[in-house]
Image (cartoon, rainbow, N blue to C red; front, side, top):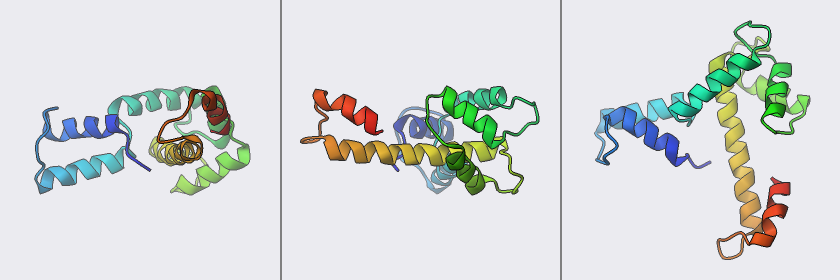
Length: 146
């Protein structure tokens, strides 16, 4: 999994208060790593979008989402995930073993899911690319495999 540049720059700007690149001292580096891990590699904008998506997906206003609500969300985002797959993901991040996801557990799940998606995209690209480029005639084939 490679961290996404936007998220890294967003966190970097938060830590040093400026987009101008400079070296980080230990405390700044510590803050950077802590925030990156706390955000599961997402930028502030992405976290805000996830907060809204989470709020909308919490159909019963319980403050948590279940696997069924998660399935509805994934389908609305265009992902084909089975209830078995989603239940497995929920079990992996459900720290309090409630069977439901708090927002922080949801962010962790989305970070794990994104890492899996990025690995899948890399494998497909690596398999179909020639000389580091995906040829136009292979784009449709690659998208179907992802």
